[in-house]
Length: 353
View 1 (cartoon, rainbow, N blue to C red):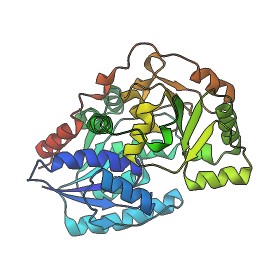
View 2: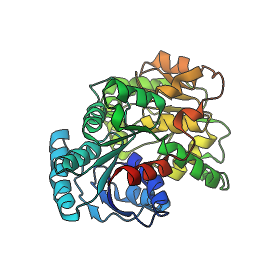
View 3: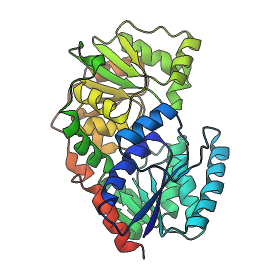
């Protein structure tokens, strides 16, 4: 079987790495990696591909950033030609980015089966481009590989039950795999002299491109009684400078980090503050309370017993959330048994003829 995996954003690298590692156990599968270049930073790309041991992409489209329509159209056009040349048996897409929807649409229009990993997620906020990407990708895919039972139920409601399988979450597989390696390593230098800290990430455009949101978030950080470590993209750092937002004394800004370093920082933090979907889950998997700087989440399983608190960007709500305590241990079984990648591969081999 010839399988083309389409990726383009950093969270997809992590998911694809987990499945690609298992594919090596199946000699009957030839996997070809197609990297759209949707998120392209040479240093970050090299870090992710090297440390996660992702197979070298056969194709790199280098589409770069741009408006949604232009970026997606450019991807579809180039992906379609590659698919026509390669004639794969199946196209594998991940998550909810423009690379996801572009790969799915390019394949389905030339009658190549599409398998969607992380199908069935809904935030019910159609203002988010990711929500549109999820809905459309799930509508056209031949195999909907759901990470949770809630995702399965959502796909059933949308009339897609016959195309849906519960596999568990490949991100859970990944955290289990890398946690054992991280525990053998020393703490990173950045936290060796810090006894207790909060880890923070801010990357969503709805926050980074909104001056009021940024000011509110940074004011909340200034009111926290612990050091806050913030890996920050240069673009966001530039925005802060232009807005003349004062950096609080308790905030330690560091350069963006790779997956392993991020997991290490998360493993040692007291709490996580984020607007990322994937980081909410990683915090949950590592039993770290999470404060989410959004008003909704597609990962509703993480909300149980205050393990994840949605507070938007209101300063008072953020401070109130950081002072909350969690209840019982989180229910990791909601995300499967840590063997999602193997289940995905077996289902594709079984269903794609």
